[in-house]
Image 1 (cartoon, each protein chain N blue to C red):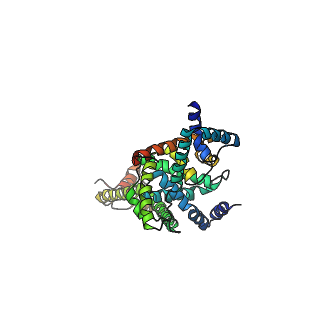
Image 2: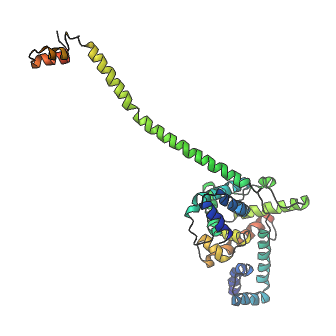
Image 3: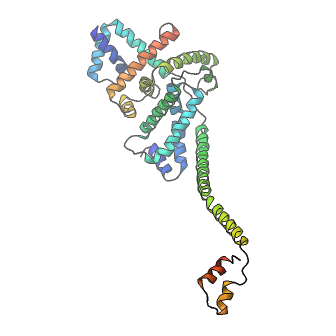
Length: 182
Length: 146
């Protein structure tokens, strides 16, 4: 039995600490995926919270045919789609980047990183979500095509196509925003 | 050119190391002889690197746990309020019953107080041993019209 299964067992046996351990384990990963998908700091936190609330209420119905992470990432993708459907296409809020807790320390590096980040986030926000999700799972989370195909419930060929299209979109957007090479 | 278009579509997969050995060898052979696809490949690799190196955000260890706990507590309070509100609706639906009982009682009391007082009660008449006609019985029950 893996770590996630142990936490799930704990939770289903009435110990909420099991659920809290799952939150602590996945919160940063989920936050970064959501941030890459919707591009808004504060709202990313709200959506991450919404995702875990769905997990809290749905864990008893989770059939363990797939890995917990696959199920969790599917909830993330669906919740992000739902958010974008409600709000329309979201453009990243660059000012929100100032308030986020980051892992960079050097202020000079941080400044240039922030500029680059802002541009990348802006370009990412313009990539249609139906293509972007697969790319984010691949490049941000490092998942394999087969794992992504399970999360998005599509074929590996479709995953390949989505990632290819997302990268083409992203390249074009970066070229447009930067006015030069990628 | 057609070969280039085909290879270009497969570059992402090659870059992600998701190809089998035969396909990888085919892409590599093409890249070795095609500067355009090689350039496309290096741009894609740079792009992938940019996304992979995206600034990662970290949350304080218990930040989300606390928010979720609060949210779950709010949900439970809301469910509790909903139950009370449900009881309230039920109670409100029953309000006409006692009101109707009170109104009927008041009307009955007013109606009976308007009737003239009978000289003797039904019990007195019965215990007197006199023969009772329907008329006298009705008179005693409903009150004398005189």
